[in-house]
Length: 363
Ligand SMILES: Nc1ncnc2c1ncn2[C@@H]1O[C@H](COP(=O)(O)OP(=O)(O)OP(=O)(O)O)[C@@H](O)[C@H]1O
Ligand SMILES: [Mg+2]
Image (cartoon, rainbow, N blue to C red; front, top):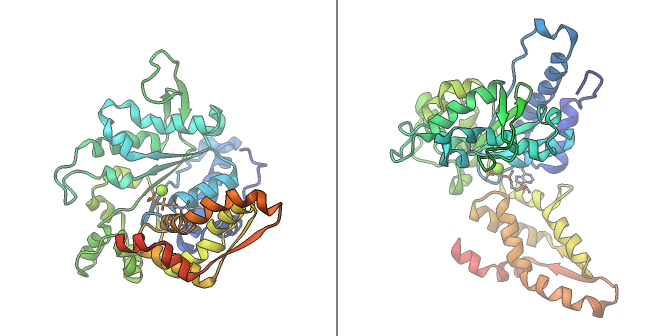
């Protein structure tokens, strides 16, 4: 990325995100600015007078409930900018954290994502997913946790800040004889994400508000108003109290969060994005001669059920799969009879509730 590369403005990045991600205005804005600045700095560091400037990084912490768009947001940005992107599950590093070499696996993953183009990887984005699981053992309620979480946080410090790291291109230690590839992480943008269950409790304590025990996921979604306003008041020290080490938090100057999705958001997610779920199923079934439609009542019913399941937008797909199971089973067998004509299939509210009875019991 040299000086002539045109980086889309934050407004353009946000516009692009709006085509895919519903709601999450604050997170969209923060990420658009952080990513824009990151690539601007990258251009500055390539300028002739770069040596006189110390360009800090704006790594981001992205918090929030499961299935509310964290990975999706970053993925959408990476696709737009056409930069390598890799999601590293931090819990995997925890499992064998003592070995030491594992933290570099995120870089091996990044290299794989761009076909081992080191130049490209050095401008990529790494998402450190589930980073909240790296909390120190004694800070949280659980005392049975392994201390490896803290060790992993420590071993990530150098990489996150910017260092030249020798990476086994295949990851892990499977090929000890393979030669190392050296990756400079200075211009890699790191985005740490996680649900941080129980964090608002800590914020409430600091700000002197008590509000009983409310988790930051699952059924906690119903308390959307209160929760999101609590998180707006977050300070880095809250994350330290949560169990992240100050050096780790200090390397992520931008903190933002996705909000719990409401029923209306879920209805919009079903239909509005360019790659909306209902459109995906419509396209698939059109290949077998069916013109799939959903009534407004059906969409609302699907959203209602998904909200109860409490896994954010992910639940939408589970509900739709249940609703469409019989239809998806039968339609392909009728394809030849239709001789190229489309048969209209309309999913109604009654059908949604009838097909998801087992589900409603589970919920
Ligand atoms: N705000 C949203 N707008 C549109 N689609 C969404 C939104 N949130 C989630 N989705 C859909 O749900 C899927 C799962 O979301 P995503 O992977 O971003 O969850 P997450 O926040 O990273 O959760 P986790 O903490 O479990 O990793 C996405 O692939 C996307 O299809
Ligand atoms: Mg995710």
